[in-house]
Length: 389
Ligand code: APR
Ligand code: PHB
Image (cartoon, rainbow, N blue to C red):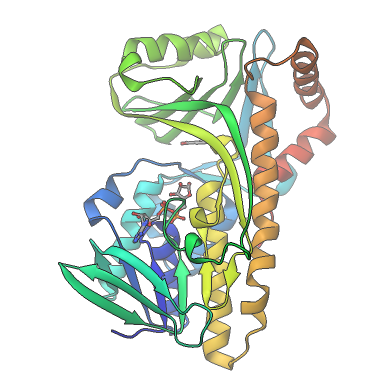
């Protein structure tokens, strides 16, 4: 097999890159380890930055998003015993968010791939990247029991944090930056009407978050210890704990119901630099992980492939390699902005085990400062909104 760009991974990064490349007249083949049903079954985040919506729209991928997504002007912060405040991203930045599940984006991307007869191979095994330093890289793998080889001009590693692409970078080239947080999030999806605003709560019992997918689908999270197990969190315990972390009026407004999905994820910040080596590019979770506190993971995957698609488009159209050469630096600037913001919000909103009385007071007075200062709210709105492309 031969293609111009071999894409490893059919998550949001891989499939969107394939669409963007197609718009530039560039051919790609996507290799995905899992069956399509598995990829579509993953419940992930669902807050899209304006930038993300703009990129999807520009490629004709926002039809359903524009019909079914729920625009939001900002987010709310509450903390124990104080009144809540709204960080008005629209007022400060002129940007809106849209609540729309990553699961739906994944469906829309597969539908677009099907419409144009894109080559997406599922169930590929033993993917290995070869000759990424040379002019003719290859991907070797097994598919339906047969050894296969895909020759290409470039490889896009969009295979998530546990993929093989990042590991194909020479160790002496790859620099890793990592921070692991001493807690996780337990998330629950339920078919109940959500609270009107995405609301982050800092409480002595720990962080909690109220979010939504649509008017009859809520998504809630609570901070849990690293050893928490799902079987110890029956629905009743989850709802009690969630409500205990919100002020009484909000707790009362939370409509409970059976969970239709629940999962526990530890929080981590991670960045791999550079995001390109030779003819291999990394994009999305393959290159970086953010704690979910800033809702940035999916948005970064979209901005990465926007930059990468543009760079490869220019290469094939004009023979210019300028944007290819600057891809890593351009993408990393936006990545680090989101990594820093997510780290900041994680520190601001969680209860850290073993925090000193001093640290605790400093956190409380930072929340107090933000609640009282329009300038601080504006700065927070700017960070939460994400950088322009
Ligand atoms: N070979 C082929 N495919 C692989 C391999 C491999 N060795 N390893 C992983 N994959 C596939 C995974 O099965 C998955 O479908 O790569 C895909 C990576 O998708 P995601 O993990 O969704 O990562 P990405 O596309 O970068 O999406 C960005 O942002 O909000 C976050 O984590 C959230 O998934 C989201 C991410
Ligand atoms: C979500 O809706 O799943 C969500 C919202 C905001 C976050 C993280 C996740 O910060």
